[in-house]
Length: 453
Image (tube, rainbow, N blue to C red):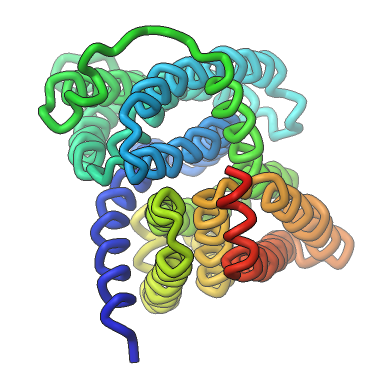
C-alpha cells in the first residue's frame, strides 16, 4: 500500500512528532492541571474563574506560541543547507523577537487585567478571576522565552530535550498546585491563586533548565561556540514578519474559542464550567495535533533546504496521514469515555449534563481540527504564511463565531449552538488549507519558490 520511501518518512515524522507532542501538550496541560485541581478542591465557581482566566492568558500567549513556531522550519532548512553561521544568527535574533513578544503582550495583559469587568461576566467571576489571571499572565514571560529556545532543539531534530523538561515541569506544577491550593507542608493556603503561582514558578524553572542544557550540551556546542550577541536587523525583521502572521494563525482559532467562553458566561456559571471542561479535553488533543503540525513543518522545511520536490510531498502527506489516524482515535476515545473524562474534573450533575453534548461535538471536530493545524504546519515549512492567515481569519471570525452566536442566542440552542459554530469554522479551515498545500506542492509551484528563495 505504501512505498518504502513513504514508510520511512512516516517513521521519521512520527519519531520527531512524539517528543514535540509531549512538549506541546505541556503548554496546555498546566492549565488543565490547574483546572482539574481547582475544580476538585475548590468548586465550580473557582473552576469557571480559573477557566476564563487561563483562556484569556492563553489567548494573549497564542500570538507568541504561534509566532515562535515559524522558527523551527527556518532552523531545519539552514541545517539541511549546512549553514551554521545563519543558525547562530537565528538564535540571537529569535530571542530578540521573543523579548518583543514579552513586552508587547505583557502590556496587553495589563490592559485586560485592569479592565476585566468589560468581559461582562457574573459579579462573583469578576471578583474571583483577576487575582488568578495576574499570575498566569506573568508566567507567560518565561513561557515565551522557553518556546524560543525550544525551537532550536526541535529544528535540529532534538525534541526530546524539551519533552523531558516539560514532563518534569508538569510533575512539579501538580505538586505545587496541591501544596499551595490547600496550604500543605507548612505553606500558606492560597486557594485559587496558589494554582497560578505554582504555574508561574514552574515555568521559570523550565526556562532555566532548558537554557542550562543547551548551553552545556555537546549537541548544541556548534550553536553556542563563539556566539556573538549581535542583532541582525534584516534577520530580526524576517523572523518578526513571519512570526506575526504565524502568531495570528494560532490567535484566530484560540480567540474564537475564548470568545465562545465569554459567550458561555452570558448563559450561566454552570454553562461556563461545562464549556471549560469540554474545551480543556478538546484542547489537549489539539495540542497533541500541533506536534504533528510542527514535525511536518520541520520535515517540509528540511526538504525545501535540500530542494527536493519529492521529499516535500512525502513530508506533507506523512503529517496529514499521522494526524488523521491520531485524531480518529481521539474521536472514538472521547465518545466512549465521555462521562469518565468529565468526572475527572468535577462531580456536579448539572455541569456534567451540560458538558456531555459539547463533548460529543468535540469528538466530531477532532478530524477537522487536526487536519487544519497540520495544514498550517506544512505550509509554514514552505514559508507560506500570509494566505493561510487570511483563511484562518475567515474560518473563525466570519464563519465560526457569527454562526455560533446565531445558533446559540437567536435560534436558542445556547451552548450547543455555540459549539456547532466552532465545528463549522474548523471544517472550513481544514478544507481550504489542505487544497492550498496541494496546489503549492505541485512541481511547477515549488520550482518557482526555489528560484525566489
